[in-house]
Image (cartoon, rainbow, N blue to C red; front, side):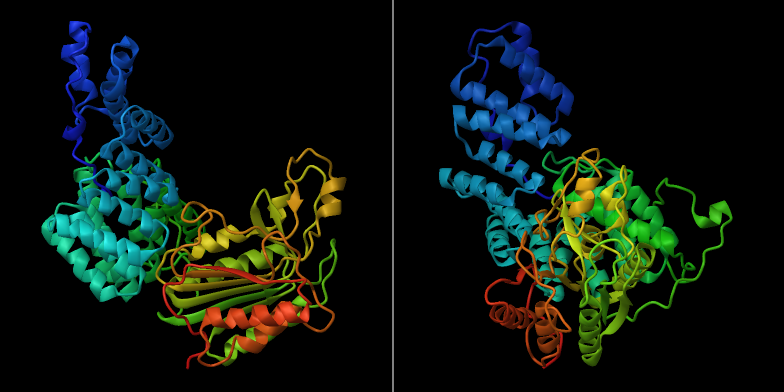
Length: 572
């Protein structure tokens, strides 16, 4: 139940003064305009009223509004937007703008949602509900200061709003204020102990604090509450609470090393139908994490609490008789870890002389400032996939994770892929099967409890162009020049809070391999990454300036950041 709705009674106008059949007046009207009516019955009743063609103006706007409410219950946000837009055309109202803004929010279109909430507030009077909903949209854009300001206004209007306290706490957590976040979440729980959502958010706070037993206990109680009494608020996307509960508890189990229970919860997450952007992002994370914990099982810790509501999922290793194998020794919580890969000795596409040197230089610089480094040179697909997955699994316990890749990279249909040295495109083959999906790496790190720095010197010209042409048109895909910018924040290909991604050159442009022992980008990066007391974005600014100068403006490094504060790779 992440959002609230402006009092629906404000729009329950007298609809039935116009001539209509008695059945329509006495039965269809209440079915259409009562928020407790089941979604399908509500939509059907509103359809029949519209078909009567006896209402105009404000009355017809009200019917379209209520049909939008029915679509919202079903999670069909495109139809919500269509009906709310028609209601606004016929008679603008706060409630219609608020409902449409909430639908845009659920689709992940945060800027449009903010515009709708702004228009709702202009119509007046000031509404704590709309301030709350606009705060959610600012939070979706990672503008946590504006989100907190709106939640402050919502709490001022309604000091008993558990959800406003909860969401203000989420925003404080995103800014690194764990104690302030915990205070707000605790207040939300005191205001309404029956709500599962604040417990889910407290699960994330305990996980960020390293208190995994409390995280698991809160996640289990939240799942129990959500199953016992599913959220009834029509503004809560269907199934979103359970999806979030299972995902957060799974992440806590995984961080504790209880891979069997983590697998159960990830499977439960993926078995539920998702409708909103947040739930789809959780499922993207669950899909990647499930794959990782399936690769390497760990013994169940003796002190791990049992889930209070075990999901109905695939049999666990104990049920099938399989013996879980021990995982590698887990990284210490708070560790600084790096994955460094340099691929240059390609067998079937143009070889590159510098990536191995680039990777070694960056790895050496990171080791010098205290990072635990996993380093791979000239990896084939199997080795590259294993090293990447091992790193993502261990990074669940890290405080800072750095990923650096030098070598060939390509974008296909707007997604970025890193190319192993044994790649060979054959006629009739799926081009992307032989590559490593960059989005998988990003999703695997996107659980918002660590700082993630991803650096890709992988924008060399498309090495697959001739093979794509030779293989014919039967695959229906084409590799484009350079790499693509991350375009989906929070759904599928994510760039969540606490992440910075840097490319050696701008999206869609080609980087230079260089004439010396290192590429221009990696040479500059190696020189500056270990500078004591240099904040990471300032460090990348120095790298950018050096590359632009050394390449005579032919190459301009690019970055996108959702970091929540200053990050120093080399401490002051």
